[in-house]
Image (cartoon, rainbow, N blue to C red; front, side):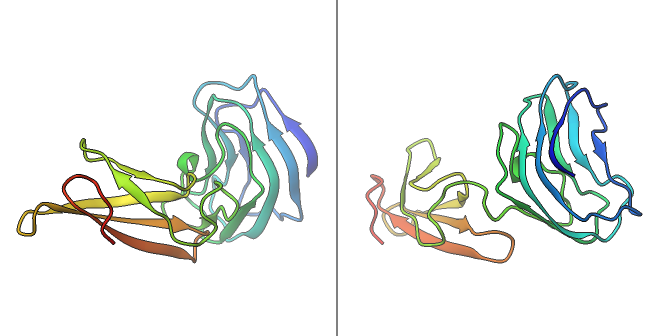
Length: 173
């Protein structure tokens, strides 16, 4: 399936059964009108696919789940995804079998720097694939703050970083 626009699907979306053979899925756009709470790609009956889907646009804000991989046991790679519901934030992937190597415009695998706010949030300089995972305050050492985070480069490559701040939010190391 290539160069296809999908509209007016049921909430179950484009259903792919475990007996399906995926040769190529490329340049597919999900756009409205879709029902609120819709799923785009729905691997509804399991299967062990190893496939790459390219240039998929999740262009309708009514999409709740872009890829339902809750029953999938193979590997699925999403390349050059786009749209208001693209990327891992909208997948249902409890077994972590869907990779999004092009998602976000983060630091490209290098390190990232950041600051924390007095309210306890972390502010990093990368794109949406740079994340703060935890903050800790060392009350025995002048209330220093430690932020742990990572920059994701797909399923197999995360760059982990520990950043240390003084109690005023000045980066120490």
